[in-house]
Length: 545
Image (cartoon, rainbow, N blue to C red; front, side):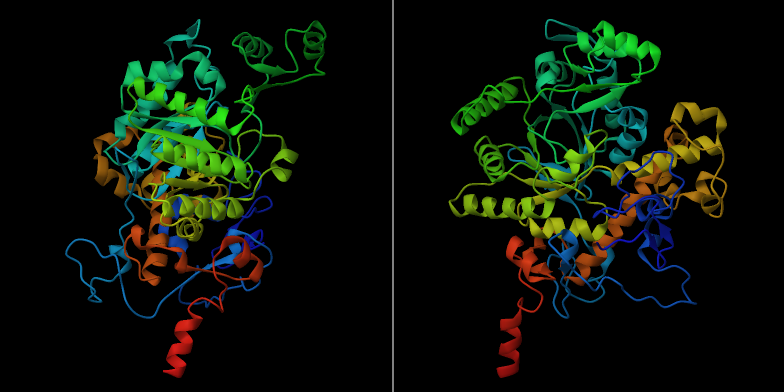
């Protein structure tokens, strides 16, 4: 593993055990810090560099690369040249500076959706974490100019929504989520609404089309990297569990059984798990899946959606090929491929540990399959890679591994952390707002109070946000959204620096030759050449020239 619990160079510490992404395996909303992503949400790009400048030197400790993972890929640097400079910029050294690296991206077939940086959120659905911190996630995403995904089951679990015979007449939580994002949407980014089996039955697509027209991107869901069953939430209220059961969900244990009700009353059962259904259980062949998928996409287009995406999980090679091929044939705008190693709000733990294709293997095969279609003259669907991304170097690696098809990196847990941190700070500084923002702290931890005792002092990007929206509007911006801007700023700056070192000044120029594999096994599995092989031919020409 690349990451240990503490990083003396950055002054960061993981509360729990770090995963491949650098995040703790269990990320808590009430965490008092301070992993790299947590602290980046406050100090932003400052965390790109070793601490205590002027009295220290720092040396890398990432010299051993064992096994196949994104951490066994390394990033190329070059000693000459520059490409991809946009506008009036030239290859003059005064222009070839990292702040001039263009991080804007776009995806889509007929209608292009632009984003300020190549990031999007994971699906933030019916989990209570997504509901509680939605304002931070949505406003922060809109301000940063990245797409935000409303996940599955939001209407179905909303006790205030009204659904009669598959027709929604009221969906206040879904509307709140869309409206919150759109209030600060400036043309960069976009809001996705995801559909699963229950959402399709409940008429979510029809409701969104009627209410919002073509403002939203509709997303079909085949699966995710964290689990190979439907989505889950946990509820501790038996009345709510009964409500969900009547809404048609699977609730375990069944709250309608008398023995379960008695066990709950006695305290032997304290919570219920709500599950979604598996999709495509009535389809038994690839041809049947293809035909059903074509019909579904055609129907969504008939509702008026010009932008449609697909989210698939870490299934095997057959399903991966189906997703890429069918999404390409139907001219979808985006395909998100989520590998195992990704995150979750609630999934069976040992399922997360044991099922599915790891992200790097899945993404490498996605590139291979996309290249096969492109070689046949097909215009391959734009891709987004998900599954354990958190840092700027992993963004670069994912985009380069999937180039030229990968346009975005999808971050789930990492991009939620600033929402947690900011809300906790807001609640600590303003106790009257603590409940409303779901703050978890009684006061500021020492590590934060050293930065200051106001939002203006604590958040490195406070005045950047203020410049964008104006002083008067700042009172409506949750601190979690400011923290999200700070994290996005750190990731953006770090990505610009990596790209400048690779002499690539726009995302379209990044390619697989900008990576090398640190061990032979990784080279074999990914098709990325080993460190001592890549450019070796050019080296020999120099030596023998």
